[in-house]
Length: 130
Length: 192
Image 1 (cartoon, rainbow over the protein chains, first blue to last red):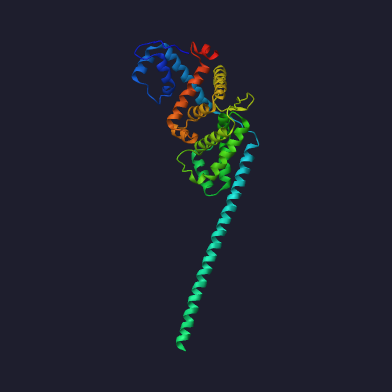
Image 2 (cartoon, chains in turn yellow, orange):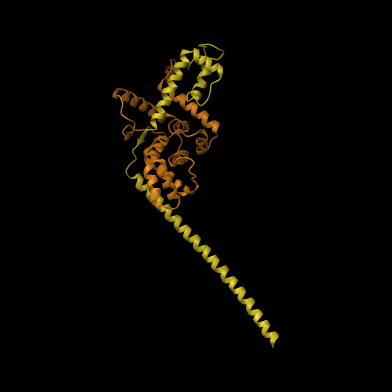
């Protein structure tokens, strides 16, 4: 482990700075002024920051490396999607039929009710006429 | 890789139910998705399962893709989520190293062979060091420092808070730095 000795200047130790370095290496977070001052004066912490930058740069470079997947991957993915697509189509179809079935029953019920009302009115007219 | 305007056209067509368009999107992104899955799981079989699951999820939720980000970025998020689920299902402690015989395509432009060889060697060391990280640290550092996903997206896909994602990232960076470039005193401490 690193020592708690103070290098450079200011009231913070190298250990304090070591905790801050992984956070500030990408420049998205700004170090406290004391930490900045310490790093500016401490060769050890400057060296450590350089190492962090090297790690970060190499990690960025990994983005350009692409592994070649096994030849069977694409057909497998497409087959799985095809199966999922078919299941969805069947599901949609069944849902559509269910809606049509319920709609048909509702329409038939409404037509029956309307027919009964009309028949009842017609009977009443006949009854009044006689 | 497809250009953004062509990608947007394919996404739009796929959303409208064009299966060929979705197939084209899969073809254009599958190597990238597989690579991310492999980096996150450290195992070709798991990577294959994760990639397949990721595309299935994408297919099922394509209508919810708003197009704010690139399709590939959206796929990275889904892949990260699938890998996280996959790894949590697996028994804890299982941890394979990346093998050396995988076919790695380098798309970088040619430059000085000596510098290239040096950079290649460092990338190999970083890859090995990544594989040795605990999966929870590895996922965060790969998604942030390799694939440039924002902290909130990483936190969301891994099911952790943003501050937890940052803490893990800093720990992962520190472990990588200590492994790759140990400072005086650190090597002895690691050996003990």
